[in-house]
Image (cartoon, rainbow, N blue to C red; front, side, top):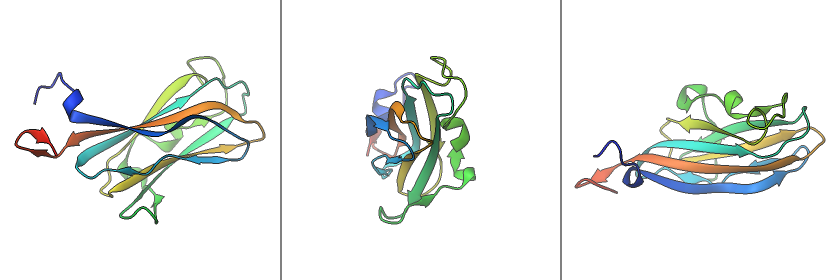
Length: 144
């Protein structure tokens, strides 16, 4: 494997968005099937946010089947849900607004999903989620 080449070592999946989250609402990503991959990272985008009290909490869920996903234990995350969330405060572009954050999953479940939970009375500018699968299982040097 060439350490400077990522194209054949990663797969990108669309989670959702960009979409606006209304007041006191939840948006769930597509359920990501990890079959054939050793790692998963979610990349979260927060667009223009103008209200300092805006809170968007990230919740990562996992399961052996798609119908019964439960919250992931902190030990199975790379980073924290709190650091990946938008917890109010500054709305300066590049600080609390118009930013990208990430959270990784290192657990053993096949299916993983991220939810963004908005609390408060104002809606949020557009948000989006992208899933990056990596470390593919290989067969004769090629991804499975």
